[in-house]
Image: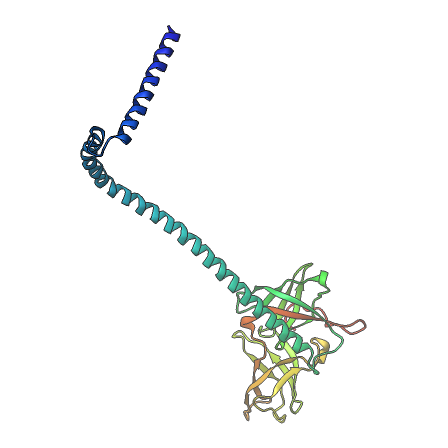
Length: 289
């Protein structure tokens, strides 16, 4: 039965092929006005309106599909562009920060190469990693500690001038008491004239040079440096410039305001000065100087 069915199908297929070949032969041999050509033209007249209508129905859907596809494509492209912009912005910020850091380090190098800078002291560069948020305690934390040779009492400078003194140390970090702290006292001297006194910090972050005899000559814009008296600070480190000088009859000492060279609001890198072997190191301090 199965063989008979297969044979029938093969016979039908052979007949269809013969009919098709015959019709193609007649189509190409007959004139344009022939029966087969006329039948083709009639079929086209019937089918064309249907195709046109179908196309008009489908066109809005095609347009919608293309619009949706375009929207998703544009969103994907915008997301890619935003990522590229963010990457470029981050790269630009990083490059600017690196440039600024290099400039500060060059400033430090120029500072330590000045003739007045204390000689034979080793400099350990450190980054500021923390700041005190209290007006009663002006300190910063640096990323260098006892493993780097840091001990309490060492002088800390920036590329501009005196910063403060190491007041606490751990293995990998240290705390620096700033000269603007109200407990800070720095023995100092005015370069022009040699008037000596003590630069004292305050709660508002301003510096005052106290205990300067009224008979000593001090003028605005005079430079104030560390005197090294008492060996609390390395001698000769610039502190700041005289901003105002007061001289009242009822006072024993002059009232002198000093503007520090160091910009403490933008302090990011510092140098800790380590005394050479055999040199007296500043004694440990538990708070003020």
